[in-house]
Length: 212
Length: 212
Image (tube, rainbow over all chains, first blue to last red; front, top):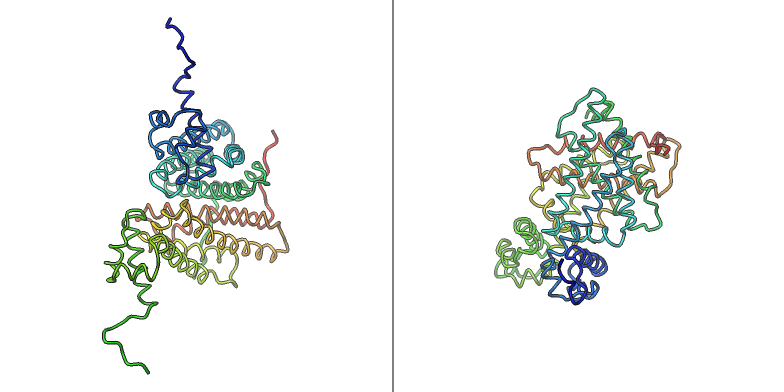
């Protein structure tokens, strides 16, 4: 047994979470460019050199925020969409978890997300998350198709999954801008757009371009 | 009649287009941050002070590029989706024009677009274009609904339009990353996802969450 330290020290992991909490708050409030490491350190009740020592540059800190919030979101979605449910119910539960997360983190995730889009290296982090979501959705559709004894090409599934992810991200933006709107209702709306179409596709229907 | 100038002068509008052509090329090749006004001026065959005098700072020049390319794209879409056609055919033609534009401008528009997303003030320019697209699509759906003697709330139409625009943007990203893919085929795929669902919605079908 070691003797207790003369003043209270928090474990590294706890300190890091405190810094990330402060960083998410400050980045959301000020934007990436205007946020200062001074304010983040002050909000976390920690010295600035310690923030740098633990989490690196402001850029690295922002990526760490994105990564933590993104991972939490992905876990919320994965936990909700249990694999033994029918495809539409899995999609519905996943969407409800997603919009629920966005609705509950309007000032955090939505702001970080908007700042990160398009700007390297943050865009790479988001592209990675999007790719994982696309893979999960394509896998789910493939599973549902096989259950009906059907099969479609990998590219087709990928395209449908990209479209669903894009539609969902767009509605998340919309929800972030409409604080009076309910997240479960937004999930139902997304099902109405997505599932009515995807469900038809699963049953072999397809749209044909008109003859010119 | 004034006497002709001693050496050839191009009209201001022509010069500006040359500068914008050069700027789109250099921004696409280097990215916004790494692009230099020197290279843009050299590519346009014009002096750097003249570029500043005509189109302002690098940031203003980038916004001017986005605005010109975006306006061209919107015109291509509006021209294709003639208002007297049935709703699905209008959507199809609009999508084909959109993906055709993205496919033909893979090195220009797609790159500018990705750089602009998320970063102020560029994001505001894109948000404005997106809002106009949402309005057009919501209007088209409203028109199709009324033709069937039905009516749905403005918010519902807006949500469907946001989802369609988001899905379409996501597939444009996908198309930009897959140069071997055909843009008309991508438009048909988008119709398969979007129209099968939207068509059902137009006929009054809707998805209901399962009882818990």
